[in-house]
Length: 323
Image (cartoon, rainbow, N blue to C red):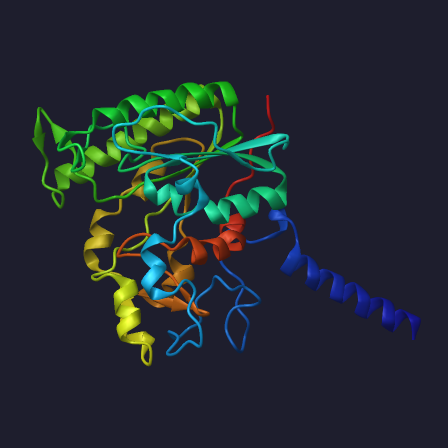
């Protein structure tokens, strides 16, 4: 009898290790799914079918467009003319390993997940973002300044200088893939192969500089699909049929996405794709467990992104020890 009990306990322990083990025991390729009833204990993962109704939506549809992280309110997203870097230290401020999050507003939208993860794992998080400034070493057009965004290139240089001093063990980058490159004072049309190539090559240059100057491991976030309409107004108008606001990943997103080809050209870089988490079977859900996913047509709400921390943690490479 004692042998039977010991065997049962060992089996339970092995199962617990598979479900709740550390990074080295988790699968970095997939997300846990129950055989019946959808994902296991993970509020960030979309169920197989879109949610139809919600008792109380978070955030409220009328406030979703302003559902941004504290990085925004604390000035850690630099405005268009600004090139100064603020301190912007989060997570475990006394942590022995430093992790950096950099990029445009598509980096800022992952902050709540990164900050939660950093606190759980004892990481010191340096979070730096600049509006409309992707992590691409390429001049892009910015409508706020009405010209080539030179301030972005200056800001990038300052970020590189700071991270060279900080010596992070991991740098997480994210940028909108629909920026428009500028060459010799002219805007390159957004959907052309030339624009895609210029942005891709600019991303490669910046990542190689990061790798050379910091020695950090690199994680490139795959940009989420762009919705064909603003999600919060759609949700507000379809409270009894929320699935009407779900959308299929457009073919244009597949054509424009260049992150996979970027990491092939940068040693030490890993692609982190969370799209299957909220777009199962290529159908992007507008609401997941009463949480609105997008605050407009291309940014995730801070409220929903916070619940992506588990999925993000399973996909991120481990930070290098500080040298």
